[in-house]
Length: 101
Image (cartoon, one colour):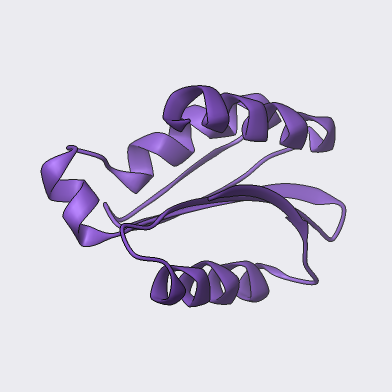
């Protein structure tokens, strides 16, 4: 699942990512969000994808963060990034789709 959303704060982004992961099997979820007029990205992965596909949420989010002139990191299963370029959220979604769809 790859989507652009608008949420009130970073906690809401994290909560939504975890709720979606609990609802979707084999979850690879990438959310690009405008939060308080700043771009943020969250990536959450099902543990099985980390092992079977050698995916790492921290590596994915760092690559996507380039599109919003930002940086980030986290754990292999969940990572977030923030940036400066709000217009880059559309590029984040496009790049994520290129990478995974």
